[in-house]
Image (cartoon, rainbow, N blue to C red; front, side):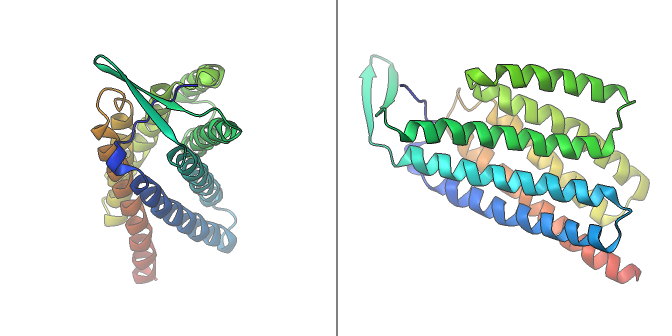
Length: 232
């Protein structure tokens, strides 16, 4: 079995630490929004957001397990002219790698879809378009195409970003601006991930950009909490 490693060798393990921070951030946001929902159960958006960010946190856990498994393999590199293939030993852990990758991608897309569905109802045209694409992606999953996964996430985020931009234009407050900016950064990170096969350094850039996006999202929610207290 041949696996192409997108992370540069010197970055092995560092992406695991970055993703671990993302897990903590997303889990905290999920907890906070669920508490908001418990206070006011009429706000169904809070529950959807809590579940979505919880699923995203869980997806990163599977990604961490997958990468840890991959990096602990005994890798054998053999050069063929200008091409370098990385061989990994075929063991039972390959199953863990494949299942972990599938769960990471599936839970990420489900999380983004829940965020998307929070702001678009079934009567709106984008829902039909995004669902048609989602079905295509689900069918295509068997091939484990790396760029298709990130392209799918990018498409979900594109519609989500539009809603947050509309919200910012309406409110013009700082929390709305920060949330909009954080999702823009997360959107950019998935755009960069699409091209990591062309240049592996882009994997490093994408990981750091994604961390920045989720960190800013955490700052956004802390700002929302403070903003709410001031309004009271």
